[in-house]
Image 1 (cartoon, rainbow, N blue to C red):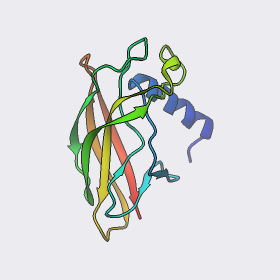
Image 2 (image 1 turned 30 degrees about the vertical axis):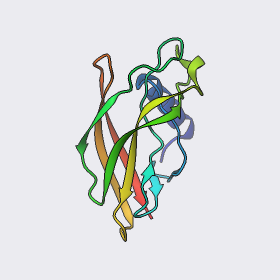
Image 3 (image 1 turned 180 degrees about the horizontal axis):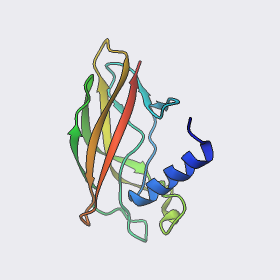
Image 4 (image 1 turned 90 degrees about the vertical axis):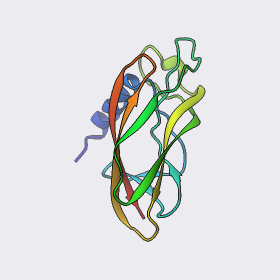
Length: 139
């Protein structure tokens, strides 16, 4: 069972390392950390990736490659304006600033109910590469 304080600390640390995590509406998190999405309805997932300079100006957004496709749906990568959420660190003053981010839109197969997920590789403009795994619960 996750420890709430430790989970928040880990998420904050991860967001700082990834150049920003962004929240968008349309999904909710389940107890297992999966985002709940309606079957057959294209839904942008909450976590996105962006980079800002020290003056909170957006720089070229990261790019992504699907490394493990979902089994019960499909994923589309898109650019979406979102608010930066850096948390503690040298870019905390950028929290809430809007910028273009790499976003993932998941659509569960109509009629399917249950867990799904997919993996991505995110490449930042400076060459840094991060792996990410998204979990979804289709209802």
